[in-house]
Image (cartoon, rainbow, N blue to C red; front, side, top):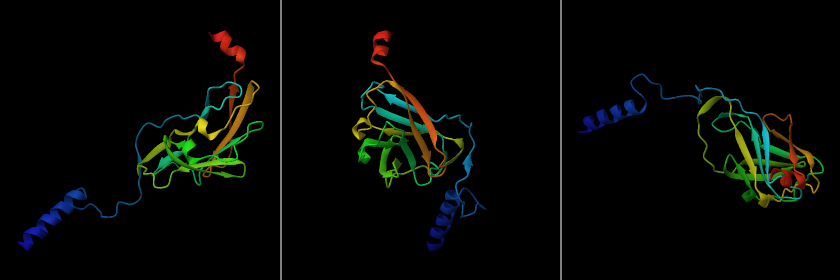
Length: 178
């Protein structure tokens, strides 16, 4: 009976490992084939009206292998006259549609996935869209004057800032579109 148990266990182990001769150590995740995607960093602000406290969306293009390659985080730094609120709750920010961890670091909001958030161990070739949402509850307001404004974003893995511009609509813009 003991011999039968050992044979069954060995058979199950062989099946679990993918067949005879398959190594136990699989090594680090390898990039999965697939069509590389074109991802352009971008910003979306809704509503875009003067004085509004909008929903902000920042899209970046890091690579993905067992998680987004962002180093120590995604950084969001509004250019003057925009300014970060003195505090931002983690509940007011999303990382790839999931809970986030946030803090401020040298005038920028640093965003990471919330601790314990499970991420796929798959590796993908090419850049992948990563969206960071700063919700209205964060209190990041638009200026009272219409015009073009900018926010710098970067990651700890690529500290070169990308300047993303957006337009705050004139109140007259709404009257023209209706």
